[in-house]
Image 1 (tube, rainbow, N blue to C red):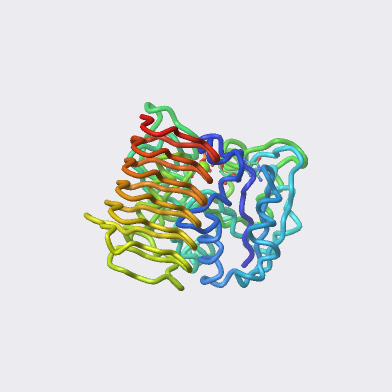
Image 2: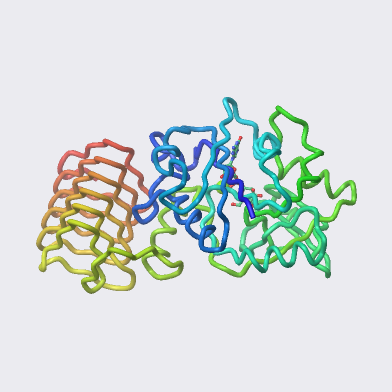
Length: 352
Ligand code: GDD
Ligand code: MG
């Protein structure tokens, strides 16, 4: 089966981290986010993938090339102006050979493709939507199904009064090429607001299939942090090959950890290639340090993400925050929960 991945969004809710890199290429536990999804597709037998790009296409080519490194045949369909999720799918019509998997490019999920596909074929659906359960569906596409699992209603970003169930669109679809006839070519069009409601109005068969695996849309700063905390905490399987284990610390190639650094509580700390952690640095929870990061003596870090090349000054304190590439945090500074420092930011010593 082939897979089309939608990766054209601007990632506005992840600014400032997405000013230099598009969301699917932003590192998650030190690999381009989409790599986790691509490797999982490959594991489940997908061999050909098309990326529908818009924002910063060169970053994708640089990260994934022709897919050879990942064991995939990877191609790109670029939009010079955004076509929306539906327009992007329509533009890729010739890629569709029979049942095709379509994925949002910003969702970390463990999808059981074989079960999803079996269900799609058993009920002879034209479109099947993977569903997940969330406490607050207002930021997602609400999907109501009937007793037989067929979709009754699809409502993108419902208001609180419109919420009737807890199943939402997980951002993974199995689509028959015939369903794409309804999308007008070459215009801005949304699958969620256009195609799905339109198919239902015409009585075409759409199925919902509840996926019980791990699921997270990494599209906001707090969810991006959560993806790391969950991965380092063991909620989804990290690619660990090539890492050295020292207690709660995972060390990549060339990383150096002082024997006088400590960790407490749940979670783990990942040190990227060439990263150095000096004496008396204290960690708690899950901390991800990119490549060539330096953590100076006495710094204290709790649940945070530090991207490549950053310097964390002595005796500074970082709590539940995100630090961009090549950031300099002066000694004695404090960076608190929810803060995100864009690439190259500088904090003078004792900043709060
Ligand atoms: N090629 C292309 N062109 N891709 C696009 C475009 C476009 O114009 N617009 C958005 N995308 C991509 C984004 O990069 C992302 O991977 C995916 O389409 C979904 O867009 P988001 O902007 O992240 O949408 P959302 O998170 O608000 O809602 C979507 O995802 C939810 C699950 O996370 C919807 O599909 C919801 O129904 C769903 O519940
Ligand atoms: Mg999203």
